[in-house]
Length: 289
Length: 162
Image 1 (cartoon, helix red, strand yellow):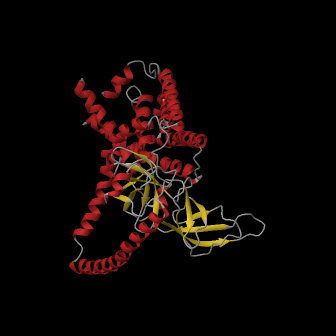
Image 2 (cartoon, chains in turn blue, red):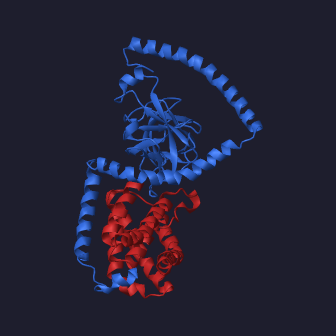
């Protein structure tokens, strides 16, 4: 009935199809040009993004339910074991923290003497990774906080073991973040042992990073810890990034072939910390914590 | 009339929502590269069946939503889906009489054009992408096409006779 009614009026002829098509193609190209050039379209993107939010919630719900079910039916025995483990961990971390407090105070004193700004603790916010796949062309993930939580483009994402990535598109309620393993991602780091500065670049593989600009005679070994150097401004200094896992020196090449393994397990994280580094606009907030 | 229109549009709308869910649903790393272009399949189907109601305009809006949800260049998927819809609407009378195997063979190059446009725009914008991400979705989408078309035809014509 429906189809026949549609077919009755001039079959095959769609009015002004070519015109509409050309118009839309023109608008698309204009949009892409504007989007690629600068950030004028960020608010548009955010507003349309809010309409996709329910779909993300729907996709995320079954997985969340599964995790919740798993947690609800865990046996008492398992829970007790876990609790004992957490207690032990807490004791250890508390012990370390006591030392840290003293060190922080000492650091502040020394920095005061040197007339440098004290910057030890950063304000952070916990975010959950939504079980939503973002762009298939790069390594990215979606987190459940957005501009209404104070998230901004370029903010650093840190996991329990190390740096994970940075926010590339902050939406209203969800944001898109790029992993450090993305081929487009480069991160200024230094070797923790001797302060050698270099850059870590993603390879497109989730468990491997490369250091393309290490000169052949540089002092770098397998097992060296790389930490953020704080240069470039996006990442606060001193967070672990990766551990060097291979160094190949080719005599005739200017640079050595160095690869490193991310400190955080990028494929398995569920919760991340968003760091408001004190060089950013949240300066006052850092002070009162 | 009005109710007739809503009841007719609802299945299409729902299919696009389901398509979007399938598009952003997490998949294991191994088969991630073979995720079908669900929304492209849906645009092809609906543009072929109901070209007066669902053509380039719908495809463009779906594409913009896809761009936003995937964080790609705003207009990238919109342009690609729009082109797909245009080709289909131009040839919808021809394609409607194709038997399913022949139709599947015709859908393959259209999906290839869709992927090519996405990749071409990526290339112009300077996004580097591996080759498997290009061919994977085309292969899986074409393989799934007969299943999807049978399901959707049942959804549509089943409603009509019932």
